[in-house]
Length: 161
Image (cartoon, rainbow, N blue to C red):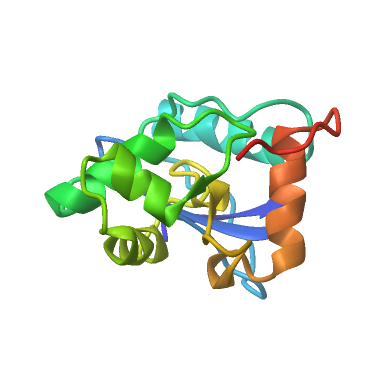
């Protein structure tokens, strides 16, 4: 990790390349380091936006730079679809597969979502199984997942499926 930020949801690790954020992950129990002196300005601004979002002070900008290099074409498609999903919308794995023109690929979508290294920026918290919320090990707990969703709908409106 290039930095570990203290956030309202606990320590959040960040890594980046010259193209954008490469990793965002909750690191429960890690010691925050803050941003290093040489961090790019866009990373500093992005980190501030992320911290602000996690404190409930506004939406997370959808255009923060991410580096999707190295992802397979299918995983990149899944990531881009999720980045273009509106806050407050929930999609099932099957719906994502259908939208990508690959009906029947729900399990592959699930594997792509499970491998997502860019929590919040590739918003996998907007994905549910066909039978409900499912497991959310990437977030540490189902309660954290629910808090993140609530941050996107602070007016209390129900999430749309």
